[in-house]
Image (cartoon, rainbow, N blue to C red; front, side, top):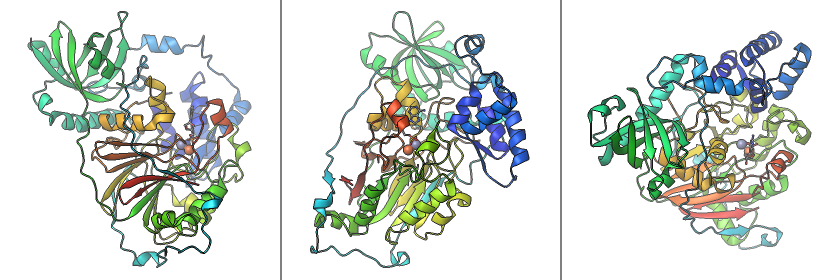
Length: 547
Ligand code: D5M
Ligand code: FE
Ligand code: ZN
C-alpha cells in the first residue's frame, strides 16, 4: 500500500494501526476501500476525536460492504512491480504509484561483537534486606531537586504532513542533504561529484548517493543502484574484494552513502563504500544514575505486574541489597522508550490477551503505577507502536486526551519517538525500535536478539529507520526527523523485548527489554523475551538489575 493512503487517513484525523494497514493493503483497490472507510468513519465519529482504525473495524466494514481480497499468488502484485520502473526519488516528479520501491536481495552478517561487561544482579525475595542499614532515599518534593533536563529535539509539534506528493520529494531531499553534509566533511569525499558529471572523468570517481536498490548478480557480485539529484548510476562491488563485498551486504534501500571507485562505461567499480559514520565521543562524567525501561505493556494479561511492583519498590529505595539500594538512591531520571501500555487492536486477537480493554483506562493504570515512583525522579516517556500516538514515525508524544492521568504527574514529561533529550548533560536519543523489524528481516545476520548490532549499523548510517515503505510506516514530513544529526551519549531503544548492550565509539547502545512475558503472537514468531531486566547507567557504569 502506498504511503499516500496513510496520508488520506491522517488528513482525516484517523490513525491506522498495523493490522488494519496490512488488511487494507491486501484488497484489490486499497485506495477506494480507504475512501469508503474514511467516509464511514467520518460519519460515525466526532471530528474532534482521534479515531484509531483497527483490523477488526476493517473486517466489520468489509463484511457489511462486500469483500474483494487480492490473491497474493495469482493476483496482480508481481505484474505491478515488474511493469513499474522505479523513478529517481531525488530528481523526478513523483506520482503516487512511484512511492513503493521493490525489495532488496539477501544480505549477510557483519558482526562487530564487542559487548562490554554486563553485571546482572538478581533481585529476588532473598535480596530483600529486612531492617538493614538502609540507604536513605531522597524523598524531597521534586521541585527541590535540581534537574538540568532539556528536550533537544522533539517532533511532536513539528510533525505534520499535508499528504502531498511534494512532501515525499522534500522528505527524501532533506534526508539526502543532511547525510550528504556529514559525508562531504570527510576527507575522502570532500571532492565528490554529482552523478551526472562522472561521465567526464576517467580515473577515480567519488559520489554521494541514496541507495535505490541493491542486488546480487548471477556471478555473485553486488550491484548498488545509486541516485542523487543529478542522475543515477550502477555501482559494482566485486566479490573478490572480500572486505568491501561484506560491507555491501549490510546496505539497505534508501540509505545515503559515499562511493569511491573507477568508471568503466556506465558502471562504477567500487573500491570503497563510505558511511557517514560515528566519530568517537568523549565519556560523559555523571554523578547520578539513569534507569532505562520500555515495553511495559500495561493492560495486557502478560504484563508482569509483580516484577514491575518490585522495580518500583527498588527505585523508591524499599527493596534490594544495600548496594542495590545505593544505586536506587542515586537515580535521577527514568526513561521509557515506548509501549507503556498494550493498546487496542494492535495485532489480531490481541483483545483476548487484554485485562484492560480501554486505552484511557490503560493509561489510568499506568498513572497509578508510575505515580508511586518517588517524585524526585524525572520520568520521560516516548511512545511506541502500542501507544495512542499516530503509527507513522516520527510519532508525536502520547496525547493528553488518552493519557490525562499521566499528564497530571508533575515529574513526568512526554516526548516524541524518536526524541533527543539532555539529562544533566547526558545526551540521550530515545527511539522505540520499530525499524529493527525491517532491518532484522532484510539484512542477513541481523536479528531481534542482537539489536545492539542493528543499533550500531543505524548509527553508522546516521538514520534511525532508513528503509521506506516496509513495516515501519514513515511519515514523509518536509524534513526527515529520523536522521541522527547529533551523536548522543546514549541510544536507548526497546520494541524487540530482548535486552542488549554495546558500547560503540563511546556511545552506550542500550535495549531495555520488557515487562511483558511471551505473548501468543510472539510464540508464533519464536520471540523469547527477556523480562524485568532493567539497565541502569550508574554514574556512567552500565549495570542490569533483574526483577
Ligand atoms: O513487539 C514485540 C515483539 O514482536 C518484538 O520483538 C517485535 C516483534 N514483532 C512485532 N510485530 C511483528 C511482526 N509483524 N512480525 C514479526 N515480529 C513482530 P510489540 O511492538 O511489543 O508488539
Ligand atoms: Fe513492545
Ligand atoms: Zn513495540
